[in-house]
Length: 151
Image 1 (cartoon, one colour):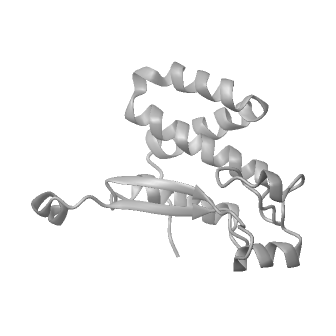
Image 2: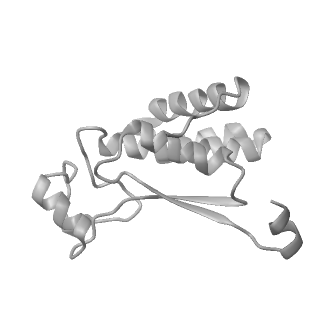
């Protein structure tokens, strides 16, 4: 922290979640690290995307990890396309949206209704799941001040 303020260096943590082999616990730890470690001035959360020609794509193809309805024509880097035995694409979509909402509400508490309304408009099918995950994050990390442990 001292180094950044003296030298003017801005650190951004970049995290990719939803990779094969990752567990829900690993994903939650990554989000906790991104938001509460104090190591970063800002953070970016991305969803692993199996682009054609990559090793990730080949692995998904070989192991049958593509989400239901996956199509080359509708491949989007902002949507989860991988489902494993540990998580579904819906879980990834929900946890990323909950993290985003939690982050925005923490930064601007007075705009909470606006952010919740935004989730309702954009993510209606998973709205209640996002609300549940977001409130869980607030209770666990902000109210109870619980800390994640790292191996």
